[in-house]
Length: 217
Image 1 (cartoon, helix red, strand yellow):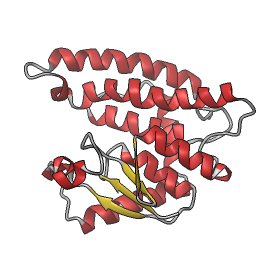
Image 2 (cartoon, helix red, strand yellow; image 1 turned 90 degrees about the horizontal axis):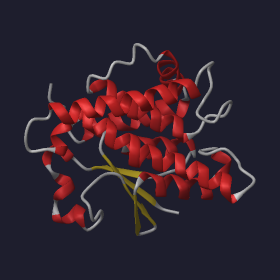
Image 3 (spheres, one colour; image 1 turned 90 degrees about the vertical axis):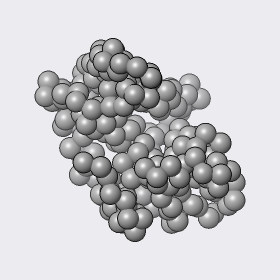
Image 4 (cartoon, rainbow, N blue to C red; image 1 turned 120 degrees about the vertical axis):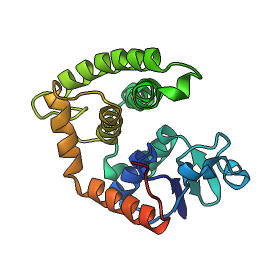
């Protein structure tokens, strides 16, 4: 199987990049420089209809959306443990629901904190304040669930933990304080210690340098 992964360093594509590394797969990666508007170029719009990252070319067929990519990788390589083994379709559906919750509920709330300008042409203060309210409720829920050194699924690491790492990193960069959520901070640190996470980070760094990307300060 030939894989080509389209991504941008620091974006939510990092989650699937980590999944590829955890599964130990060989793949080509290509940066889509969203700072330069490459995601809206005619060439890339042929790959991703919405002009977003990530996208995954699988033997010439394009797959978009993190949940779809992770689900496929988990089905093809269950030994990688991207999601814990389950015994029923309902349990599997619950795991997919958790991923959809990350991408469809938590991510938009975090975006209101990190990039409220995406939601309005006017004053962003109300949008950001609502984002903080939403993320606070989410953080309280997650912090309680991962208490005492637990992962999202208890004793078992999963790619959901990486997704949570990315979401709360973005929230913190947007000014959401994690000081009161020691269990989340601990979870993030444990995620960062995993070899696949470090490999994904190195891959992003190499891609950023090769593309000559400089983030604004």
